[in-house]
Length: 293
Figure 1 (cartoon, rainbow, N blue to C red):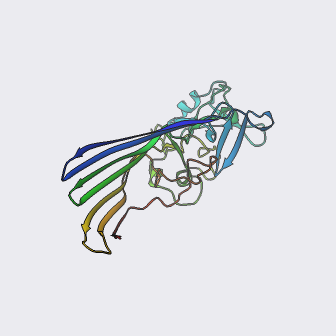
Figure 2: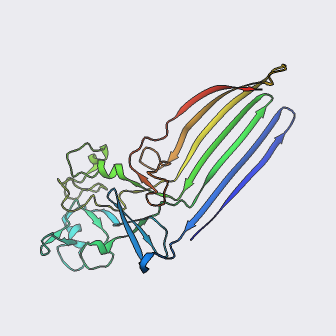
Figure 3: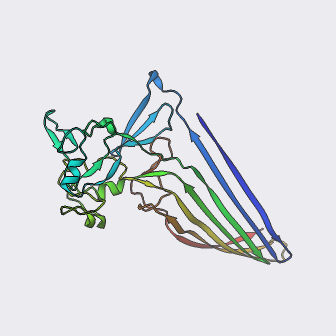
């Protein structure tokens, strides 16, 4: 089920002989909800680039599904205190199906949602929604005699993004380049940090798919600025020329850590909100001449 709305607003602020000024904005919102799945299933999971996206009856399509993190254990005592059934702390069962592997100081504190003392698949939950709460444009146009200035912003609020590249470059588990964020990694007992210790091949799964890699993709972008000048021509064959210069993607205001909050891996429903490291939209300045016949 899909429902939503789009609204537009435009007003002419000035309409004088030499001055004209218009302002406007648009806002859109949509909501999708899964009402039924094939064969009576309640949910479907898709694994994409290390992430799990869940499509579940009663929820949105393509929601990020993973572990919730509560920070990094700063000390051994803090790690042990997190245990609810074992005084040695939270644990998971080793691949042999018998041994308990305990989270220690410097490991990520994953939320034990079912309070059984173990971190398992049962502790996963919805950790993000790639669909924005609201999106749209803000624009204004000012004209003075033959000059005209057009400015357009676009924005998106409330959408989450899976920063796949950051999960690779801040995972700290392989011999590959990492970002400078790893300088904050846990190294000594009692250290307060949001980056876990580094361990080859990550035996504790600190870099597993969790809300560590889900970021707020909200942004406000100065999309285009265009300055034009109309030069009339008294001719049987020409009405005039328009000279223009335009700047694109000049400014972006966002807390997102990736290269471009507006980019996504695909336009399809499954895969929305995935930043796989594509080149962001470039800042550019172009100019031209329009001939009015």
